[in-house]
Each structure stands twice: as C-alpha cells, then as structure tokens.
View 1 (cartoon, rainbow, N blue to C red):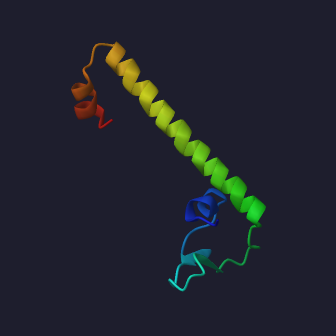
View 2: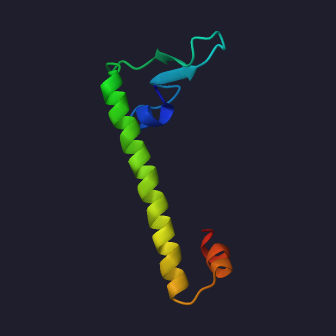
Length: 86
C-alpha cells in the first residue's frame, strides 16, 4: 500500500511529487505521480514505509526513556508533562 509517509521518507513531497486520492469507487487509494523523477517501485515504497515505522517506534522509545530518566531524577509525572509536554 502506498502511503504519503513512505514516499516522504524516500524524499518526495506531497502535492509536488505525488498526489494520493480515493474516489470512493471501490478501487481504494490511488496515486498520481507528478515528479520528473522516476516513480519508486512497490519494493522501494515498502522500504520507505518500514523506515518511517522504525523512525516512529524509535521516537516513541526515546520519549519513554527520557520521561523515565526525568522521573528517576525526582520529577513527578505531572511535572514532566508540564515542563516538557511529554
């Protein structure tokens, strides 16, 4: 499945390089390729999607780690939320 995040991970910009749409005609999401660069293959898009998902997972793990370290320093959960928005 083509996702905007996967294509962005590969360096493409929505509405400049591609447009995703769904006409609700039963064909699901469609992509219009706008870039002068070659359209990535399904395999390349899958790699971009996996990289984006890994990035999100790592980001979430770093957030949990930072929060637990701040709490270990004596800050309460509420203080961490107030001070850092996490």
